[in-house]
Length: 125
Image 1 (cartoon, rainbow, N blue to C red):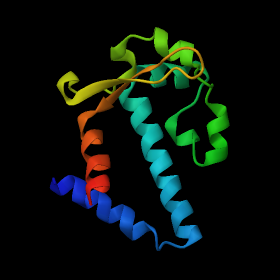
Image 2 (cartoon, helix red, strand yellow; image 1 turned 120 degrees about the vertical axis):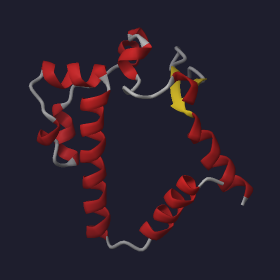
Image 3 (cartoon, helix red, strand yellow; image 1 turned 135 degrees about the horizontal axis):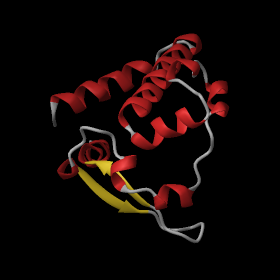
Image 4 (cartoon, helix red, strand yellow; image 1 turned 30 degrees about the vertical axis):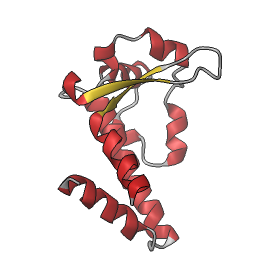
């Protein structure tokens, strides 16, 4: 198992003892971090935020998420890969997964390869 994976599993294990307030603060920091990442690294989200005049710093809590327009499955399916994959992610570090299509249309999802390792480790131990 890689050091990075062990580090993330340790953080998850440690978080189970956080108070409700500490957990909400952690969630807020992580939300702000992922919103900033999406805006700076994913072309589609940068354009989407700009189209409605939103900056990452405008999203401070869960309730602020309602300011972001909803993206439909059909919209995602029409986008070229380079618009929805973060800048700096190498295609060789990714793999594709197709959903079952329970809504009638399967969705192709691109994931980083390290997502393959964590679930396997949890199941084996």
